[in-house]
Image (cartoon, rainbow, N blue to C red):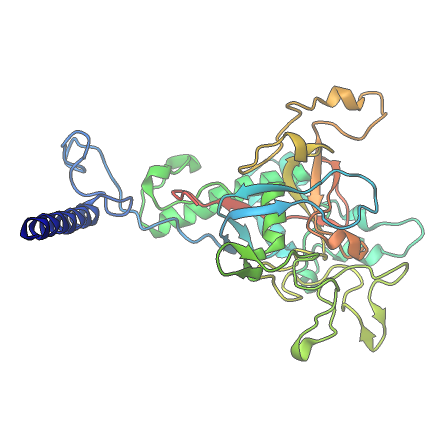
Length: 397
């Protein structure tokens, strides 16, 4: 019996010592923000006269207007009746990695700022190509002349979403925004700025990854905001028809009960209700901060304006895309030739892009995050805008 107790005690002590040893090793292991002074691969010292330079790093800097979207598993696709009979977004389970997204749509004031700088350092040809197409408001049988002339430039519309922007212009804006934000971050951090506006090295640790358009999967995941329905261990209490709870477009809770939760067209000819009781308060677009944000803190993920996403449109994308960070960049596995775009028998090509979310001129059906439509990437309308996204770098979730 004594021998058994001695053996058991010895094993227990060994386990405790091993645990303490692991704990000690873990506490001294290098990390991205605390890499140590010596290379664990070569034994050479970092940052000496001839050594490898390792800059200070305290995590990805905060980008202006960006909200963190924690990734995870979700079911993408529309789970309600397919009234358009398109069958182009059937349900499937995917995982979306964490990323950042603008909390608001890009507004007129942001685009005016962009064109201001473009006018200073680019050709007049490119400056003109960066201007929104204000004629998207023009209708032969409607008097929308005031929007054509005033919507983009009049100060009263500053924080309304910019429209008349095609997919290509939105991509150019993302490139410009990356450069201008990173220049400011590097300047504030005291970094040596490259002459002639060259690229600031990512290794500096003070700049951000590229701004870009969100993928369709990212956009749909962010609009669902199912983090607000999470319960206990990996359970969601319910799906969402819209970016908010319930199967109605009105607020079911508290002092705001009965108020419309998005800017959309309630029915034929009904853009805002009647005088004295406007149901959504907007006959066209509304402020980018109007209506409550969803559980990720994102405004207007339903209604106001549709939003461009990165993906090329294919009706069967749900079948042939990856289930981790899915995106469709081109016609891989689904060539445009099969759609006969060249002979005008289809609108589907490698230049048609998805847009999501519904707009001020759409009925409630299009407010569902799972619905999707598409348009030529060089086309613009008064109902499509966009917001930017960005990866969360240096993270495995």
